[in-house]
Length: 251
Length: 270
Image (cartoon, rainbow over all chains, first blue to last red; front, side, top):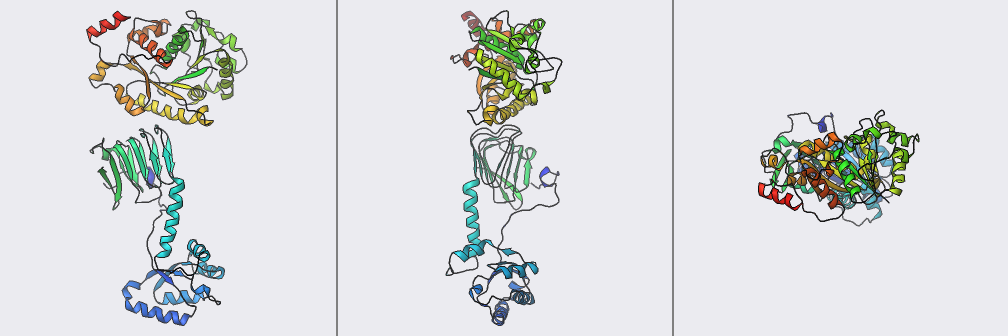
């Protein structure tokens, strides 16, 4: 089950960039009055000191930048640091604020900024909303355009790469390699190599109608045919990743 | 326009040249004007199998280099006046072949011939690539064993992606499976892949099964395409293959072990 027996070609490098998502508190600022902010911040933290201790926060300036006098970002960051909060990003910043943020080594998030600036100011900003919004647009565009459908057998020596999901209506021969950033569906026998979630998506899966693969991998976690040998090979199979381990189920 | 057939396999020694000679002779005997070209530059064999090795004057490379005309290089078969052989050069290597040169020759042959059979060398290098590049149909010769099947699979991948038809987005090359050196007895003993096994891996249209036969070696040694040996299983199987390729409905033979009684019946009918 573990993947550390042999050094595979895929994880030889010392590091890799993976795409993953996690949630973080967003601090939405409603005023430019620093005194008021400091006061209310202390109050909030007092309610749950452990929760906020050394917590990362994303600063959202959308609402306070409607004011004529922009907030002094440098001061705000100093205040947050004083309260043991770590700003990890800033959104809806104006040009001056962006420069200041970069000076403080804080990344500037622009995706949401442009979107909501254009749309309206009346959208009620709950803390989770910005994340949901960006994810939706990502999913929508990527899946619609980058999925790939192959209707012929994938022959030995051929390599196929899909930026989204990859669907193969025939079989994948021994010596062939199919890769996808999303899921892989094989409606024939899978005899070659199949690598799903090659950009690190642990949610991706591999489906095939017969598993006789040389290698299967999800997000870099792999099994070779040696490990697969004991399994029932001629049944429709699903492969998923759970707690860093590949789970192989008959469908 | 001629139909260009490439006889290919990836792996060596599976019977490409034997098949090329037999198919070309079969097509010619059916009355179609056929040319067979040896693409194995440097390892010339086709002329031996066809029994015309003593009549080679000019070769494929001479024609490409403009040192001889096609008419000078083509050898007319003595047994069938519809069949012509273009031998490979023995003193050169595959780099002597150019895509432009091969294309020109095939184009010129197309005007005069109905079928052009290209005998591909083994491997997936230049010679093999040029042999299949201009093809309309591919006869993939495979032995019922795993390495041959895998090499054929690799070749099929190349046919699908690197041919002229693939590059120009035309209709794909028609691919046919020829399973050679087949022995039903050994399949039964589990020593050999069965037709079903091979079909399962390659998912390819089966054009015919050529049984393992002593007559193939005998025919090669004496320079007579095995299809002319009407007594032999292999010869009959090639006749069936040519007929099937030309659209006739011929049942498959030699797939199952023949019982003595059935054996007699088959020959009685002939």
